[in-house]
Image (tube, rainbow, N blue to C red; front, side, top):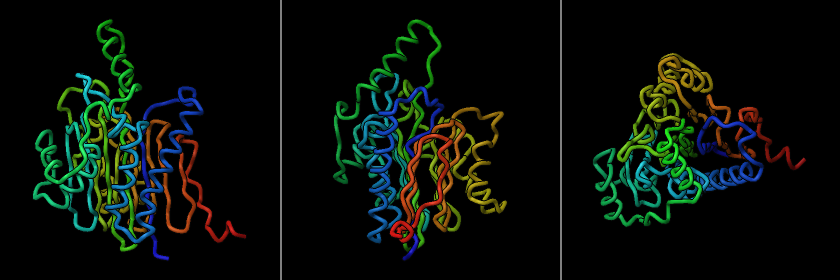
Length: 321
């Protein structure tokens, strides 16, 4: 069997086990499992890594539990704005979008930009017009806004009025990396940004080398956390650079990127990386990162907490014994 693999993340945040009930934990794991299967099914049928990461991220963009697409955070004006990026490790072609509001699947728009546009990054109404021209699904604001994110936004407004210390912003993001049977890598990242962010604010997600990067020779990377920190550190490219130029392993490069410039760049960081052999690394400084991994002829792995280390997958043949 030719090797292929997919790994996903649904965001990293500073969260304690006491702050998450069992029902929400199971819902997160179910959502991760659905996204993992969506991407794996593409690869298993011989599909491309690019199509696989799109499928996995599409699944999370539809799921209101994740901060991307439906269920995304609201800006200071109580509106949704989405950023997304996708990169082909074989061609180094890129598609990215920033501050779009009505596109049901921002990652699919990013992919169409990669495939059909002479430019890498489109933002705002220009990106939305490109989506219309390419017959992508658009939705009204009511589709994206969920009661949970509306409540988080209202809490922010109340805290500002009363001049209280504001709680941490929603910083989670979704992403996927994959290796297909032809040896090609791809990375995709999609986000709804921060609760109460300024209108027009764009985070690290669509910044190539910031929150998203892929190159067949070395690795594919998707980041999550506080966008300004990740952008200023160019963390996705740092993983690539530490592997290519310093000879670090995938895991070492990922962990070093998590700690890079920690004195100057303080904030939540989560990094998902995959190398050209399909090995995966998860790095995060939050204690909590929604994540999953599935490789050919292995059992899928889904986890939330730092204590849930990536276990050695059980081979199908071993299961049959």
